[in-house]
Length: 347
Picture 1 (cartoon, rainbow, N blue to C red):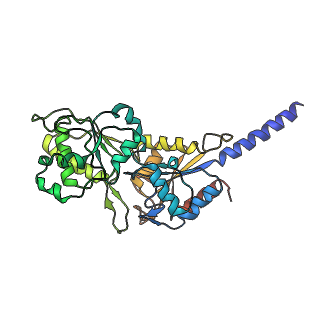
Picture 2: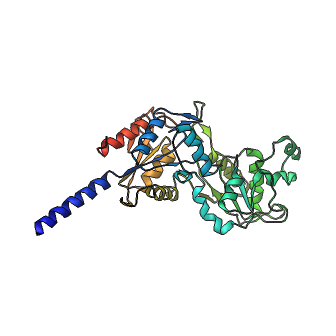
Picture 3: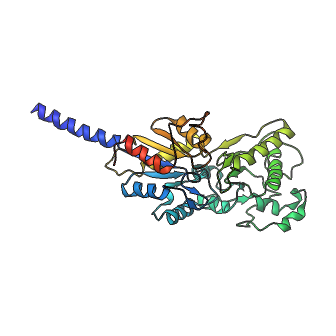
């Protein structure tokens, strides 16, 4: 009788261990891994369809932003002919929702192209103004005020507070700046006056500066990488340091921060059925940028494994990145899937 119970228990434990061993998931960067602009890269569609068909958990973790998660999900659904929800898409600024409780009714400035004001409004920020609207309402801040009349209107064009009266409580960089010169000048003014450029006296105190990511470059249709949000922030910081002798205290979100990867792991685990283990044995982070995708996965450790593809920022001229070597280097996202299937004995 005892031996029968033992045998049943061992069989059950073996089945559970085998299932847990095969519970792997994928976290994909988008640009340079699955897409280049709006064109799908080789094997991208087939890979996503295999994961969907076989009920393997996968999400998208990108340092892109400037739009709602549901909007990006709809774009991906259309491009890959696959049902994708906003819950599967983590943009660089998605974890910044945690700041709503602190700033929901306070004046804040938004940096970024597209619909960053709509993003902030959807998250719950009540007094979030795009920086373009800020300096358009106060053209004297610019070296040449007439430029205001030459620029297109912002996506929202709503003045939610009086820039000359109310002090800005924080700066939120959600995506790339559209007008570097104008934005850098006004951001500098905000930083040295503690959020109120009408004050004539410089302030030692800096208002909080939150950044959705620090990417220096990103892959695009041109064969050389393009400057990204991180490059803009470095320029701003260089000018601030040249003028004050100090550096800006940035708070970064997005990859490669631990917060971003922990947020992604939680989202991925939520895709598992209730009957399955909530701990995924292996999470494959598939990216093209060693400095953010590979570095972030390597830093957080188990159960993450970094997979570097040669279809984006990393061109594959060397066998692996010297500073942030990936666990695996493959040609494209299709080979990343085949790698996982071999490791987990899945057909």
